[in-house]
Amino acid sequence: MDELIFFLLLILVPILIIGIPILLTFWICRILRKKGINPKWRILAFLPIFIVGYFVYDAFYPSAEFYKEDFKEVTGTELPKNSEFEYKTAGYPDTHGDYTSVLIIEIGTEFYKELQSELTKNGLTENGQTIGCTEMDNAKRKMNGLKIEREFSKENGDKFYYVAFLSDKKTVLVQRSSH
Image 1 (cartoon, rainbow, N blue to C red):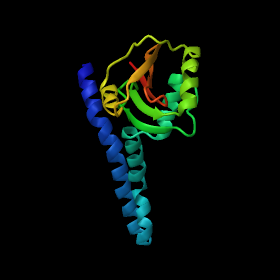
Image 2 (image 1 turned 180 degrees about the vertical axis):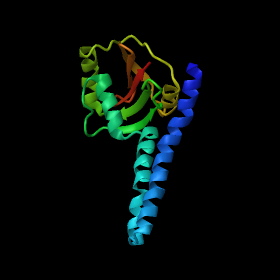
Image 3 (image 1 turned 120 degrees about the vertical axis):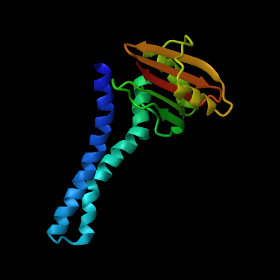
């Protein structure tokens, strides 16, 4: 019975998320046409599709702000303004909202040194514990020959935090996983 409900939700939710804005757009177009509204204003009828499209796009390709929040959650510190994302990826949340995000970020040599002591203050330990996942495998292929020098991790309830310091002394690899 649970499988049937899951299957129905798997089919119905996308149809509703996409179908309602499309139907709403056609309905608005029809009303505007009947009222004789100038055709250039009919573009507003497509607003529901644009709005849903934005949210779908953002779900598959999260913004830099999303990754900055994950960095802060994992490390307990704000990301410096001069930081540059070298690579970022995230899995799509499952039915419980659990996901994995991984990023490689150049944080600069000064913050690189400070961050190591901040991690221990925030409960991460240098134990080399990792959780393998597709996102992490892809990120490791994007390290451009850099090696992992130190690894810190922490389990926080149903979440796992991981930070690796890379051999250029200015770049870190950060993973946030929930399960």
